[in-house]
Length: 382
Image 1: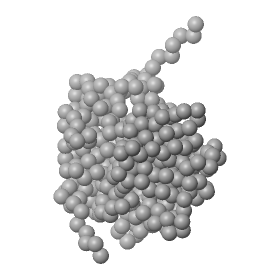
Image 2: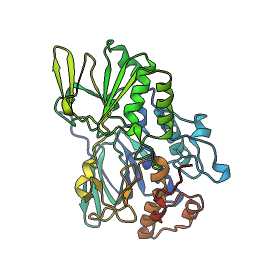
Image 3: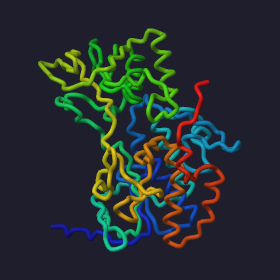
Image 4: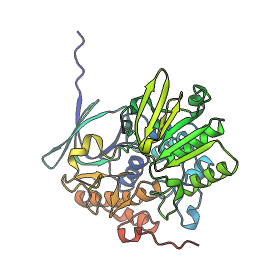
């Protein structure tokens, strides 16, 4: 028998879990602070969740090279980069955005370790012990930046296993090739659902979107709560061009039945939709934080955080990314949650007694949001 290879054991000041937009962004701030005892752990590749988007999906927030006029590109994760300039794209694909993130990693020489699975995170003394696929790490601080893409809400009702969640689709074109002429039923009418409907309709398929609330009907100043202008515009133009898209609101899907290759999507008030194509789940993601769920208290389905994005029950454990929320405000867009990277780094630097002067640049360039009162919607309908 081959002897088991000994797993290494090391100590770090900071461990960041996840090398997506949040992990890379907060890692770049630590690099600017001159920290050398930290690592970014990623089980796949840099920007893996973006790479897994359907080929047709684009970032809904526009990228624009406006840095020289004091406005950060909405999709940038650092003060000095612009995906629009790097990629020459206004709405990059997931794969293109992953290229941008890898460019940030290379430019800042960030200590990213790919192919590392974090198996557990345990509080120990004044820090943490992380058991990983490559060894054990003792870390004084942990920044959880693993995102939500790995936790799709793929079982929201009985029979959901007969459906396909939109995160499992590599290409809507390939999915459409396997469909017959029956309508394709999409459960969920927010961004991912409407994006799927537009892609499939563009491929010539009849599409039915079913949603309890019908978010396509509403407008609001916060794109975290309504369809983004980019998606609303695309939908409006498609409907004006008589695209084969039907929108059904006020219907909550209760189950999906299957009989001899036919799918029956059963909703409230006796609603029923029959198709020979697998229904698509655009039902978003689970609200939990996976391995570190037990280390966070929750309120209304959201992790409860201090004003520095630290767990209220586990000192030293911070959250970065789309699950950050304060006072009912969701920070689920890149341009929102990136403004909290420096806040987390500032708190960690304070406790490590590290010079925080480099963070002044983040304040000057509106990448250091401490006053959360400024996040209230305040726009006229002009």
